[in-house]
Image (tube, rainbow, N blue to C red; front, side, top):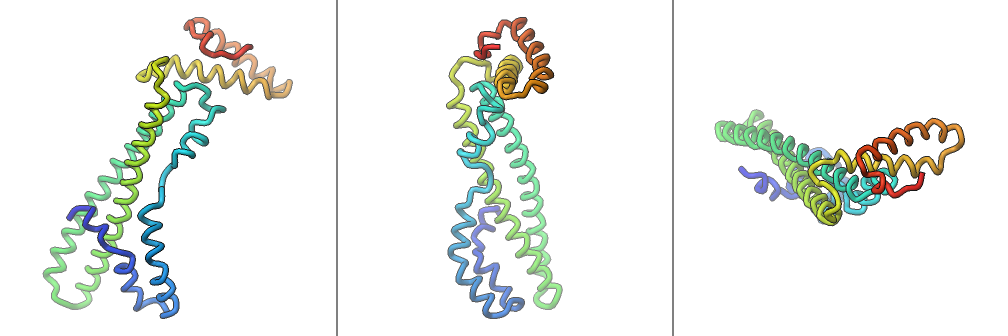
Length: 213
């Protein structure tokens, strides 16, 4: 059974067995909400939105250059890919367990054992449906980060090696932070800035920092 097949189970199918558990009034409320709940579940953005990515993750205070933003976007993309692959293993394992449950169900025409297996089946179907939604949104975010990277890549930095670009970004960020510090903090941070400036001079990239110090 493919994950897509498990998604055909609507919330109304899931809610039906609750008629034996919930009071009639509560069940009626739940059933009345099902159309809106199904829409919410199918359209909700689980992970980051583009606004969150740009304003919260790639904000200028932490990533002041296009290069640093690009490399952070790459890191976010790799992290999301790792989570997607991990969930794919979980989904594959659930599919195999579902096959096992269905085979065992066929051997029980009736009785408590059959009912317990039906509960196991329904739980696995719901789990697969939830995993499909999570994985689908992870793929959306993977594409979102790729779109952001394509926009940031202006040809002025090395997209494969973040070393020098990260040095420039850190130096620029620390210099900007220095301007807002008090006298005591400034004295401590100044030594760090001087070291970064020295390294930038050695690497020949001080002009890229673009901050007067």
